[in-house]
Length: 213
Image (cartoon, rainbow, N blue to C red; front, side, top):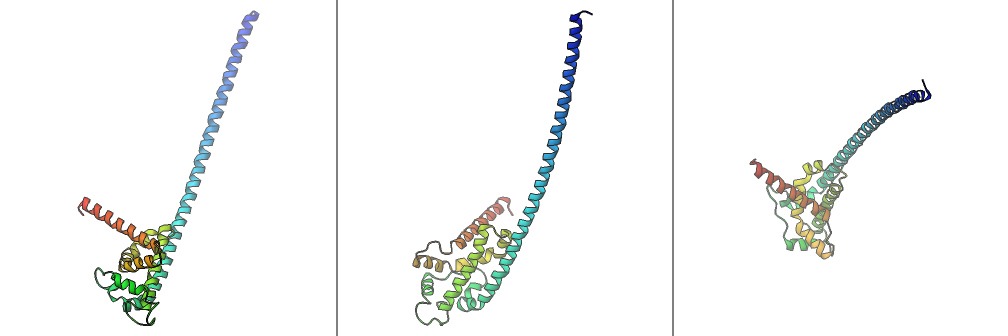
């Protein structure tokens, strides 16, 4: 075999050798890629599990916070109930309760500034303080609801109707307070809650009409 023939054979063997190395590198690369994909898959699974656990803990904390808030507010409202009944007996009347009149709201606002602060009745200082305490308690619920620091579904189930009833009953007092104190944001979180509740009621009624239920 002449030198050209030998060179051709050597070139063929070199080509085969190089191709073999390339195939080995491709195989090793694919194996490494498969290992990388598996590692990423495992990491993703672990992150999802951790996220699920965090979400479950967060949901539990929100339910616990809602439960604690409900217990606190109920206890406080029960403490106010005797004065509420004495000052505003129609607040707990059957069916839809009417709101206090605008004139009564004005008298109620200044009740602690004039006359006998210990007098009884819907325009007394006791009635004024009781109404304000009730509105403040409801605002605590509304703020927690807006910040989503509690389980909002629990708050809705427990307080939707009561919040709506109480706020609308004292709505004129809210208006007078804002005007006299030049504070348009007085009890605004509570008002926002009622707005949200009204929208949810309308949406439910609309869906009910569409489905015929």
